[in-house]
Structure formats: C-alpha cells, structure tokens
Length: 392
Ligand SMILES: *Cc1c(COP(=O)(O)O)cnc(C)c1O
Image (tube, rainbow, N blue to C red; front, side):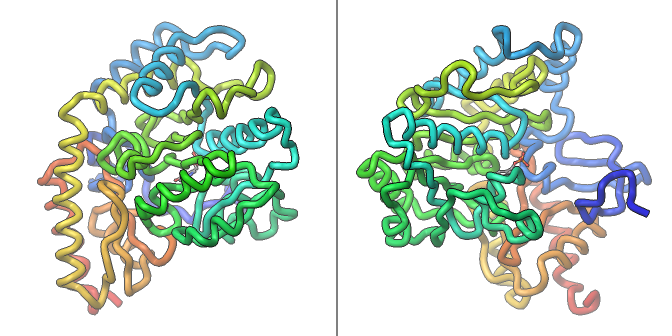
C-alpha cells in the first residue's frame, strides 16, 4: 500500500524533534551533528535566537497578505539585497525552482520586449540542477528528474560546464540567455573557473543575451562571500536565490538589473504566497546576522579549517577519496567508494552529510559552525574511514 506521504524520497528512518545550532536531536534520543543543514538551507543553524525572535514577533502581527498590497518586509529586504548586489529589483517566491522559473521568464520577456521574440532559448550546463518544475527540470541535467515526465519543456541547449568554446558555439540567433550555477551543488560540488565566468559575461554582452546565475545553493554567504559570483568579479544580469535566504523558512527570490527586468510589468508574473510577511521577517533577520561585518570573515576562517581537514583526509585515505571540491562551506569530497555508503555510515555515527552527483560526498554545514564542530565532524569521518574495510 502506498504510504500517505507520497514516496518520492528514500528517507532515513529518523524523526528530528528539535535543533540547536549545528545539532539535531531525534525523537529516539539520538543526537546528530548537522553538516547537511537541510541541504544548505539552515545557514544560521537551528533555532538561531535572532530568527526565532523575528519570526515570533511577526507571527503575532501578520502572517499573510496578498501581493495585491504593499508588503513592508519585501520593500525592506529588497532594498537591503539591492544595496549589496548588482540588482536593481527582485521578485519573491517560495523556492529555488520558482526563482529560476522567474529567471527563465525574464530572459524570454527581455528579448520579446526588445522586438526579438524568436530569441527564447537558454544555454544551460551539463550536470546542472535548477529545480523540479517542468521548466527547471528541462534546464537541469538530472536524468532521474526527467524519466517518464516527457515531453520535455522546450528551449534549452546544453553544453559542457566549463567549456567556453561549446558555449560560444551554442549561442545562436534564438538564444535569450545563459544560465548556470557559479558553484554546482547537486551536480558534484564543482566551482566554475573565474576566467570562464568572465568569458561568459563577455559572450553575453557581445550577443545582447542575459547572463543568469543560479545561486540558490551557493549564495547567501555559503562560499564566504555574500554571493559566490563575487569571487570572480563578474556580475550577472539575473540571479536566483533561495535555500539560505530564509534560514529554514521557505522563501526564494529572483534578482535582476533594471535593464533585464524592465518588461516585467504588472500582471506579467506573480505568486500567492511569495514574499509574505513571515517569509520576509525570516529573510530580514538572516540578513541582520550575515551582514554583520564579522560574519563572513568567520565563515572564511572556518571554511579554511574544514577544507584543510578534508584535504588531509584525501591524503590519509586515498583509497576512499580523490579530491576536495567546492568553495567555502560548500565542500565536497569526490569519492572512490560509493558516496551513499559513506553518507549512510556517517549517519550511523551521528554526522549528517548529503550525497551529490559524480559520486561526491557533500558537506554544507550551517555557516555558524566553529572549529570544534569541524573537529567533531572529522573525528566521526575518521572513525568511519579507519574502519571502512571492516564495514564493507
Ligand atoms: C536546491 C536548488 C534548486 C531548487 O530549489 P527548490 O527550493 O528545491 O525548488 C535550484 N537550484 C539549485 C542550484 C539548487 O541547489
């Protein structure tokens, strides 16, 4: 008999009851060190006091209000994000997929508005992940998300991630935009070359197409900059964000320049729940914490500690690991044994991690972790690695 929860996930047999910082407590008494963070969502850990207070205060005033009316929280959060980024304007939704849907629509509408409706295609990357709506599944390169869901949404041309010549070749008279993750998460924790991102910027400019970054996972301080593209010095025309934005409250946003979004006029797009007062209170509180001038330097410090520790394990356990991947606290270990076996063993020992594509083990801990948490995680990783032969 099918379970009442549609079985679209192969779930771990655990129910978490309570969280505190980087720790999760299960109903059966087990405690876990959370280096998964709801897949890079709980950027400030669990039950951060500032977020709890902000959400409680908002919950007692107003939960929801339609986008038919002005929403003070949206005006505040958008002004704060605009001040810190390339963006002039942004649309609030509830998820990463919706943020990318908005990006895709902006690209088509931009070209349409400029008198070139034939330009609707988007150049996308191998091993990309952009969400699970029909359009974002088509934009992504995950076979399991497409199987049996055809016909596939039209309008995406895939090239190899990192291959500039392939991107140049793919840009044609029908191209509207290029969409990619500056650091691929799901696809295997691969950071794009900064020179490659700069060259894509030039390619977009030469052809009057939009450069769109999906920073749903790598944004909001995850890599040690507020947004991952800042490392490259390149700015996009459009950027989708979500995961860390609400610190665990569902919220996403699509940021854009005025030039890119000028055709997004009243009635062109919308969302019932998007950017409601609760979501905006959460995002505003996350920004309070991340914008503290001491916050990102600390993320970089602890990221360096984690990455050095992981590099050490690659040397010590060469039969298990090939290399360290990713950027900042978006860290991956490319595995020589099955990544999901490692995730399962780490889970049994009390450390949460996530598998990613290309047989990669992913660590995306809360950004508030400290050296002692890295050490605790490495102690568990060592225990699993040292006994690996026995367990297989
Ligand atoms: C998680 C993710 C998405 C999808 O976000 P949802 O909130 O699950 O829709 C899109 N792009 C990237 C890069 C992601 O990591």
